[in-house]
Image (cartoon, rainbow, N blue to C red):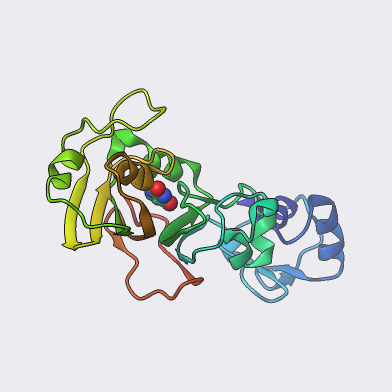
Length: 230
Ligand code: URA
């Protein structure tokens, strides 16, 4: 059961103050009857707002194919944001929708977004070792000894206290590799290759844990069950 004004405000429809006017205008029904008390409790399943069920009242978990050129920051001064690709109402949701870790502006591929902070923690904490798989193209040929260097758990990045955890590197072709990371240091993939004298030209995330990006077109997203990663 949720207070009606709190339900409308937390899902981004209007402020709690505006909820009173929404109810007075008959825009909200409970069990088919117009509701007039913003403080009344209701089961979200029985609520209709402008005739529609409430939008994801239990929370959100989404996968997006992040295109290059958009940022994971909430700050619009850094460029177009991944949040601008979502329904505008979601910008006013509480708790807020955030990305599960970041991809760089120049990185494309699978990005998770959620309003479940425990899920963010579980999927990003290095302790949980959730594998993330990237496809990288490089500016020069990959030497085969790189596989052992990445797997060694000794690769040291400038400015980091400890070395990188062992990472999986599969050489796909002369200048293309698949990299599996279980942690998310700042610009980690680019910096690991840079530490070995290579520049990443393109970087694309194909998997997050058991979830593949597959054929989702760039810029599009789809919902996942909240318990997908349980
Ligand atoms: N590593 C990077 O360098 N950039 C990303 O966006 C993700 C991993």
